[in-house]
Image (cartoon, rainbow, N blue to C red; front, side, top):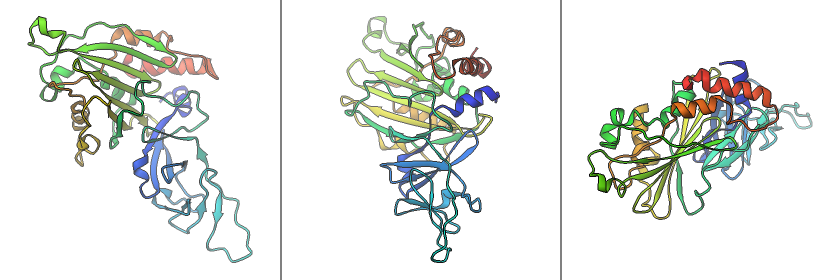
Length: 339
């Protein structure tokens, strides 16, 4: 990975765990090769370096003890929030504790996920579209670690052209032609809309049975699609790609699925999935959540026009160090196969 891109991504928010993964108080995470430990009760969480400063033991093997993280090796306790060591059980009475402290990172909870970044964030936490409010049923699916680039994973989520060929069994006979559309910019977000129709329908029925598809991407790798049914109701799937290796070639794929109050509840299997599922199986589960009274769903695409629009730098907004991030942003899309 280019050093400029690496530095930029250190300042970006990524999901590192689900709140559901904190059932026992401790979970693991990783961003750009940095091993992390996540601990808390789900109401408030701490994200810290993943190894004990005493003997380097993996703290993901520890447990929560009276709100603090207990090292599984010697029982040292690390305070929530600060990461400060508050107890060393092996010390005799009257002996002062060593000034040991875990390095902690910014931490936020949103959409059932724990988010963090490795340095001070350049941008606010990515948000779902504004219409996804408390009336929606929203769930965080089981994440998967995939051996692929984060840009390739994100572009695939929005690529229309492969649907009729790769996902024909799941989606049915969807249109092969990807109609043109206009891209709207809102700060660091891009949005565009399209429609989904089925091949073989009479022309006079095509409009009545087509579904509106609203796509959004928020830098760096948060993509979502909302499918609106002509009979009412909306469903949403979001994919959030976290680079877990320093070279960006291994990605932790987090995803969300939700329905509004008009649509039927999502099936429980949408959030679990079979063990040992392949990346194609993950895609099938995602697409199945989008099926609203028809035999297919779409995720979206990034066409050549959208790619050129991104590469021109018009997606940039003023931030702390615009020159450095401008270079990284251009690299991000050009070298990632999006040019």
